[in-house]
Length: 582
Image 1 (cartoon, rainbow, N blue to C red):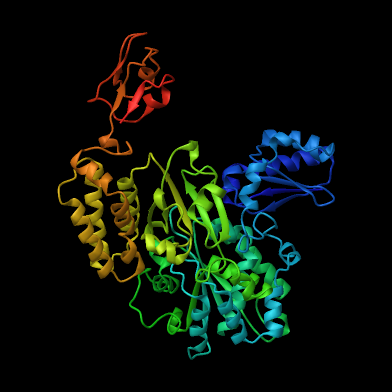
Image 2: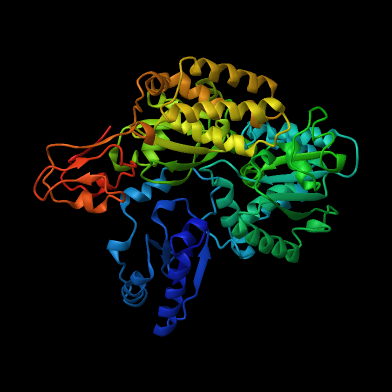
């Protein structure tokens, strides 16, 4: 038998290390001689910690939300008495979260041990690079990627083959392949899960890319906030070198390729490729004018190709199975699968990989289970701070680069932040603009000053201090920032504001002219009132941190609006539904 504990960052945060340690103790005490193994995140983050038990025939039983207190029962009943603990096993409904997906990038996440190269080899790992080096020319590799229709999964959706070919055709013997693992969008964790759960797929993809474009050196630019990802990458690289898959004369072909890791400081602007290159070179991460493009003059002024983790992790599967197999999934213009991170007001938060072309409804409701607490779906933010809000009436929009762009949002790296009826869209725009304002490198006046001025207006509006003309001023500033900024950060920073103005203009008008937050979310515009349903139990008065609630036992209580700090403790405490928030 085998016991496998999911130990990605989400699992560890939920207590997976303690669960694994308790399994080791219980198994040792019982003298079972079963090794407790490690794997990455399978994507069902909302069910962590996850433990998979395999019997001798290979049948797997998945246990979810396993805490140390649950371990003894599983060991006694399942490992010793061979009887599964059904009440701790995953439900049939939750099984659908993974079974409804079509996995390419996530094919090995939550399945193999990311710290054991033999596990990767057992699922046909490194066979793609062997095929490439023994049977294919660089031009043939690029052609296969072209056939696949693989587009960059980092945001812009640029054809991968074109970037590889441009770097290949640039003169010079010294060339670089850089992996952008500086995943910075709030609510996005696709790349992190691949790095933690299947690092060898990235390494193999980089080796193939290096061969195709004629590079002998690869660099993984990974944010320092991903220590587990960096640790597992370092283990994977050491094991690949030991096996001869990385370094000199790979597979006896005469091709040399090695990789090193550069830990970045987590600057969002370094998602822009020229800013990333500046950071790699030891400079402050600031973008520069293009052309020249990195494919001609990039890292150390040498031809450089930059792809993100998900893009490169697709490559081994494409080469091994053929470009046509990948191109058969998805749509004519948006081919293959895409990984999305479901976060926010969603019942089943985690990672989803589906063929492009499914609708937002298919992803959010069909796989994600719908809205938490069965609230009403309001909107989804796609593309992070560079994207935009897509409203509920566009829920049937297909998830393709073209269709999402038409809404004013972008597919981006794959973050989906789901919002319910209690979300204030003005405040959501303020949140994202605050993020981009903080992350601006300051090089461009429009981005540095314009985002600050937009943020000041949004902050006033959410405080109930909006003025006539604020909406028009936001629109004017937004267009000037988009037109006057040098890089993608500034050019897309106004998108959350523009899309919320497009679809939820009434909320801005309510804030400004009626001093009312439609979602009853903005503190300054919210009031708490005790209704006639009050039983006079005094529970709310006892919980109020500022003594704003008064009243006698068994009599209706009253909230002093002057004292009330709008913390919501009374609403949380009342068992009779007597607190009204509006």
